[in-house]
Image 1: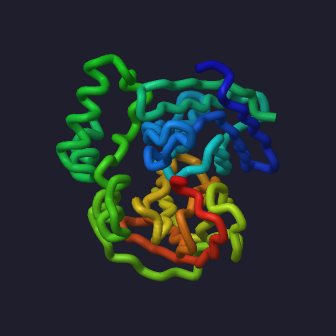
Image 2: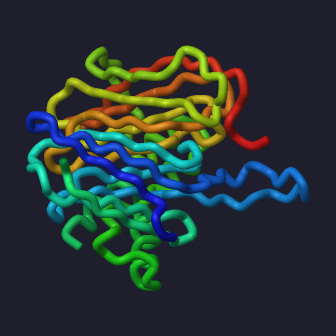
Length: 104
Length: 157
């Protein structure tokens, strides 16, 4: 899985606002394939972590009730412009992806 | 694994051993496993069971210091924007719960150092339901909720 994450981090004053979009089906496991009538297996992101300079700023634990192509936004303090921010997700099938961005 | 004790306390030995297995099989490196995914909390069919699985407590204190932003009416239950902001000191975790969903717990956020008590995301709602924000601060649980009317459900179908 590559290039599934779009992440932006913007510093205003001393607060950094992070906004991220992830491409993922987020299948609940409850819906059925319309053509075959077979259930579609659950496939969803379980954990998203965000690190700033190696410190974990936020850990998001997600269930299948998060919408398809998830959006996540949060804020934190203590970053400087140009700092590196890493966002990483892991889903219930063990797939994962990560993306690094610089805070601006 | 200095936080093994806390993890065991929080999520029970079952979840802890599942993480151990995941590390053992190389699915996840220890660095990425910062908190065990609380399966029992996400599988729970009731709000109380979700809270028990997540925090080990169902003792909620209503609070007007938590602001939950959801639409009054959601035309499409598959995408309902939710944002939660708490004006409480020392917030450790924020959870978003959709009361009438088959599995009510939608998501939970553990705040690390420097994180502000704010998260925003988009969730699915199966039908008209209260969306509850639970905020953990200083070992206590605070909550507030708001009802969202759903005209088209977002689960299954």
